[in-house]
Length: 294
Image (cartoon, rainbow, N blue to C red):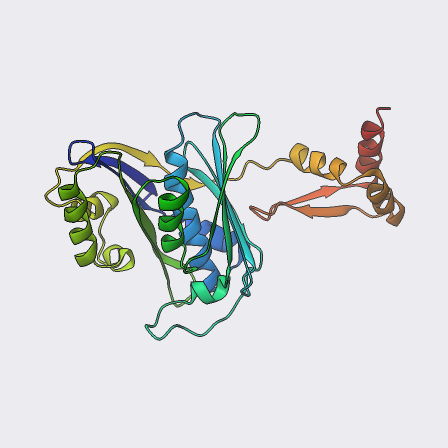
C-alpha cells in the first residue's frame, strides 16, 4: 500500500484532523541511512509528523524543517517536508543501541535525551519563521503537542508510531494530528478528550491493519468527521550534483585548493539521502575558477 495522508474536519469545522500511513517512507529512510531500531523509530516519528505538517502549508514552494538536538546518543535529527508532503530526513548518529524500556518499547526519549526542537517554516518571507521548544519527553509526539499549544496557541493531540520488525525493517509507521480550531465549544473539547483517553496506541491500531481513514473515524467517533482530501506522501530528496557543487563553493577556495593538491577524486555525500557525488581534480579546478570569476 502506498503512503498517504488524509485531511478531515469534524464538529462543524471546530476540529481539523490529519492521519497518515508512512511505512514505505520510513522504510526507505532506514535503508538509506542503515539505522538501528531506536534511531529508525525516532527518525520515522519525526518524518511522519513532518509529512502531515508539510500538508498544512499553504503555498507550493513552502517548506518546513523539524530539527531536534539532544544530549542523548542519537545527538539529533533533521527532517524537511514540502507542501506536497515530500519528506527527507537524517539522524546525526544512525546506529545507537539501547535496552528496551520496561514496557518493551524502543527508548526514543533515552536516545534523544534532553534538548530542543526547532520548527523552521520557510513560507516565502524575507526570513523564515523559527519556533523553538524544549523536549518535554523526547518521545516526539508529546514534544509536538507541547509546541503546538505554546508556540502556535493551537490545542492539539499528536500520535506517532513506528513498529520495527525483527530484521530491522519497518513493519508499520504512521500517526495523527488533531487540532481544535478557535472558538471550539467546551462540549467538543470534552468529547475529544474522552475519545483520546480510550483510543489504543497508533502502533496498535496500525498492527490491526487500520487505515488512516479508520483511525480518524475511531478518534472522531460521534463528531461527524468529513474526509476532505487524500494526499500522497513519500521520501524524496531533491539533491543534484549542481547543488552539491554550490555547497562545495561555500566551503572556501583554501579548502578546495587543498583537495586539488591531494590530486585525487573526492567523494561527497548528501546528508539526507546518502547519495554519493564525485568531483575530479579537473572539476575542482573549474569550481575554483568559477568562484574567482575567471
